[in-house]
Image (tube, rainbow, N blue to C red; front, side, top):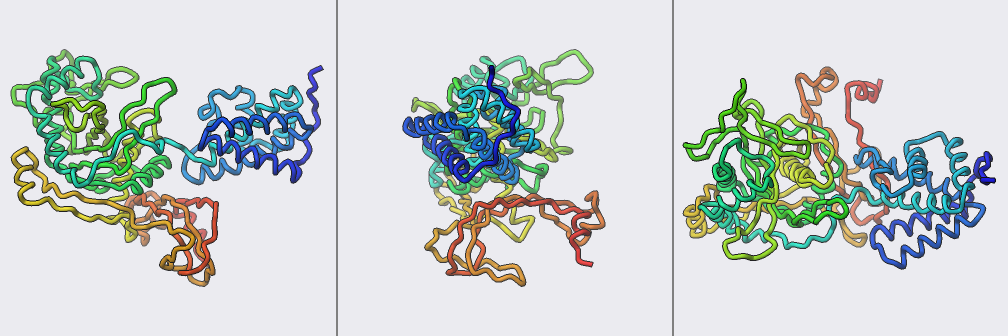
Length: 516
């Protein structure tokens, strides 16, 4: 006799709710600090509840908490939560049950399935309780793309001009060509010119990268802005990229917090990304030695570049970049060993992105993770151009004339000034005094409240918004409202866990919201 019963599980009591909250809290602690003691407590609590006759209502309460957390997850812009993807070790039957609860399955059917699973065996009940608590902890924590600890030191903004000049010098000459040619010969490149010789391909790549570096505007974003860019990257970009949202035609951003990419379990951890350079790119041989020409091939069209991806090789035909601007991004890391003659930074990888392209969801375990952070930094820096609510402030650190003349001798064409970018807003501590934010008309607040960070679609021409639903005569820009405090100065700070859901304004909703 299996012990499976068709009776629905009883409604959760206050004791069941307390059990569920305790399990969820333990799972959250195990996620943030996976110590043996916390893991043992979670295991003991799961076994204890599974041996009681109240395991089914406790699981029902846990799943209810998971559903509420999943709604907050989606309100934060993280998309659909997949139990199978985030917890691949979970048994398929239990993962399916949890996914049904998160997706809003009918409660009566769900409770029946819970009762069946718990009555089948104590082991099933124990797994369901522990995994349910783990799902809730993951949903509450949010996506964790970049670990907090980096193994390398960030770039000192005072040394950034010297580092750029040294990098240009290190990429000139035969040794740099030989190093890159060897790497290309070993098929470690992603975007490679279509040439017979690896040496010639290396010369093209180095010439183009040096042109980007020599004319790049230097930026340094502090640790707080880097973390804000990571959060925005996790939420995903809703609109396409545009040339006016790129802060400079050619640029070089150094991060105040090195970015540690996510890697699958068992694979070698890649180097931390400390900086990213960018510039316009076209599938041609601009800035290359004049004698280099693409390899002739038979066919109606001539490929100029090759892209080596996980799905094979793709040929890229020639284009000049005028009709559709495209940017080349190079990701820089520090060398692991200080060997004489080694450049101060090493090109870890590269990618390209085109105007009018909407970046898709962040691809975990690839350089796409870092690219999304760069797009977020672009949006932050250029937000003051599209709205009256800038969220960053820049302080320019000029280069001394004597140092600038030395940079010129090394091939630098930029003014070598460092743009130090920081966030304007700061979250105050409960005891701090904060300037009052403007309260809505007709409403007086007697407390202060922290408003969570969110993105919204900003209409650039509200006058024609209602009459132009297809956006033929106006367009929207994506802007970010960083975490801030609302309320009068000196009022008590009220803690909140509320998530703010921002809905895009359309002509229909605007007409419905307008008073008659």
